[in-house]
Length: 392
Image (cartoon, rainbow, N blue to C red):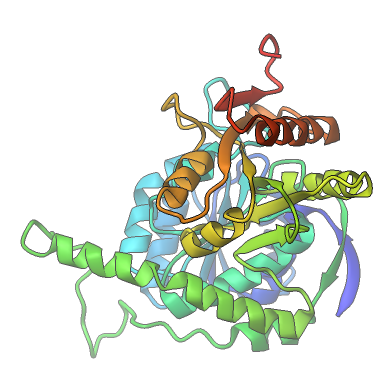
């Protein structure tokens, strides 16, 4: 183990270097460009054995990844925002073919208008594509989660997206503890693909027409495999903790044992919220935090158990559904808690769209307001657009 200083993008590129995939196909897009740019230097300098494929679009990038994975390769790529949107068609093809491709993603707002800063609209827009999704709170997690996600993906044949918040994490320098190259290789192990399109002794058909006679059964089999990802993730995360000393549960709870209220959030905001919780605790106020690290598949029972202990919870969404009923995390959390024996009063805060800053005072306001909900015993405002001028 050694200590270095790296940005989120550098951390993910470094993890990719230690993984040493067979193929990386990529097209640059701000603010994820650095990941593959740095990795391409590793390729040019002979530090990895990877075949680096520079293509003409993100759609082509993931298409090339699909081809390489079908051929039996260990495959990775990187993108953000409009790049992920352009990959959208191929996301489903990769997942449907059970290809354990891993995307190092930087969360960035989808246009229009054009914006290069952070919100979660890109990955939330692809949440039903059949990819595991992990949201990181800092550069250390970005490094660790990419290694964990690759092993989980290859054990379950489910592709994975590991995301960081644009500029907040991607371009911010942090202290990082990294494993030795040999430790990473031992942890992920030799990749043994389940099949190869290049196996001429055992020919297979890929991409056939699959109509109403069997499509439903094949899709149901994929759904069943996807539901097993959480169990594998828990096992691999524990193995990684034994190696590194860092444990990453699918759902993180922070100072929740005796808390009356909590915030439920994801990404870099969680680390800021921890600072607020610490300050409130010093004042004797019983506040907690629950952080969603894994968004797909949903850790349903864990969410029920974690949120069921509070009197009120404020969900914080860094994207909106355009459903006029709150953000995606809020909507799915309400659904999860619908039949729970114990459920809190639940309200939603949509925040930070297009990179709008979220600071300690904003989060303190959320805790103050959710504490007031408990005192009143009711919710006055179901959805708040936090930090929008003219709505205060």
